[in-house]
Image 1 (tube, one colour):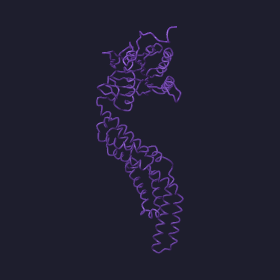
Image 2: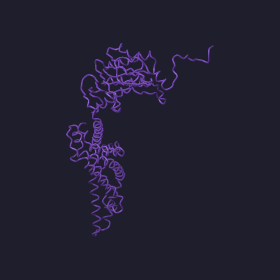
Image 3: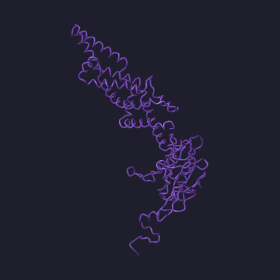
Image 4: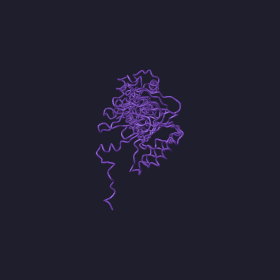
Length: 441
């Protein structure tokens, strides 16, 4: 990232060439063609084709010099029989080669740009070295295939038809394409992977260049942990972003985040998750400092019901929670759960939340849970782990709700739901009598 970030011209070239590749490249088809079945047109058949064409050409020249007419006729008949035998294979090879060449030619321009750079970083050098194949740069190898494809295109030229017919041109070129595939086909997936890696690294480097205040995190070994100072969401402009400190370790693996509506609980979860993904991808993060172990991010955020699948929101959520538990059996997990068990009653929610938290923490996971249900802020009574309660708060100013988006210790002490309802014009006067029927009996 540090080496690529200031390489503006290189990154812009990759962006421009990569955009064309993204629109026109048939990646899976190309990789399947390159590393697919054994070539049907073998070196032996290529030698036979060369010999048959040479005999036919010699017979025609001999006829022009005085040999009997049956000599070239016999040679050409044998050539036609050979071409007829391979006709279906040649037709298929030519059609596949034309499609593959179109895609490879686009990649070739991108590869040629990569080949011009001399990188100093060891990882970038290894990526660049992986491009080499059989003593040739990939762009040179692709140029060879492009020349064969150009010759195949010329078979439609009326002036070239007699020559192609006499020399078995289409068959010879199809066999040359298969020879190219034997020699370089196994390298094509490696070329595509290297191009994709360079483009991804370039994108992350562009982000590092565009956000110079962001930092590179420290990724270390040890028990699961996530520690961030001045953490913010990468998509919120710096002038609007309110940073917070988050610390999840083995001694305090769980934060229970309470707070009123619109106070920023879900955004906090997203900030933790997105920055963790960026950190483990090698990118900079929106924080003053950040260190973490290698963690698999699992989230239950914006879970929705499904009419098509016949699933309620609650059922969809517990399926996701089961996936979290199963993954925590195999991986070091950072869990992010928004409104835990929101779709059930408070009694079942309390019991279920305690079991879920216990299950995740027993599997050495760390994470954050948000809730509106203040009963869940004491689920640590039933688990042998320390839990930290934090909250986000708000207050009224001139009749408007104001949020500070800062984490405060402890449990939130009030709710803003009624105030928000009144603010949008809903009548929620708690002193008004309830109306349950048409009138007194």
